[in-house]
Image 1 (cartoon, rainbow, N blue to C red):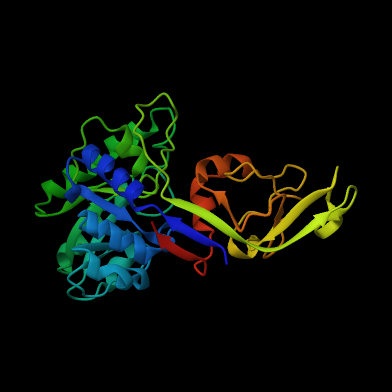
Image 2: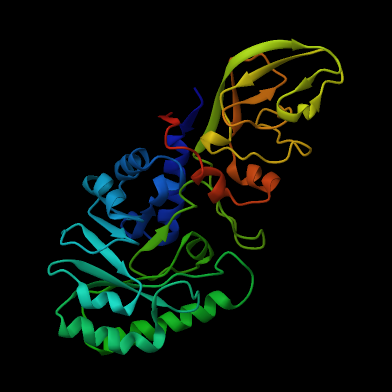
Length: 334
């Protein structure tokens, strides 16, 4: 069956680069949501912990429970708060503050300009009053940047807005609250990181999405995708391959079918603009649910070893290329 290799050395290289930007390992919170961007949440949690990372970020309570034993603290971005000494929960709407269970920790997410979710800036005083009145444990205050990986002034605009929020929280007398706003792009752009943690996702997996004009930090892809040969046949000139017969052989050739398809989370793409694998092999005809065809008789082939390059072919982003990969594909640490 198709399988994924997780390169431990590349992951540790990336984590070291990120720790240098953040100032220490203790300021790095690895984002492991959505099965660690397709890399495998348990594997990535275990390896991150082995490197010395103490904090993580996930999307759900279920994910948090999967990895809580690997870390000192886990932030849940979209879950109902529960009392757990290792977990905190992002609050993205002021109405949620009316039903916070006793003993649970919350992190107030403030909308400083992304306009997706979060407490509105003009609601901050009301939110803090509710937190005081209900004796809620305010563990952190956070925001999220919408354009940290693009040129322009929007990042600085949002940072200034978040600075105003920080000051309000401090002036209200809240102590021991952690503040965080930096994602991968914001941290990689930073010249002097000064917040309590950085929530680092795509960068730990080996991808820097910043324009080339920014200072480059060398990162190495952690994931590579392989497929194994299912069958081989001799194709005669003019014979056609796969659904619709989109590929027509221009000569006699040997082709093989490999066990990867859109059912595994691989992109179907356009057979008239075929994807070329990491080893330079062109996919012949349409991608099927479970198979691709290539001019090869190798026992296995590397389909992708750089999601950023693959994403450019399909007109998407590296995040999608890895996150779509099925949880059922075996992941092996090398």
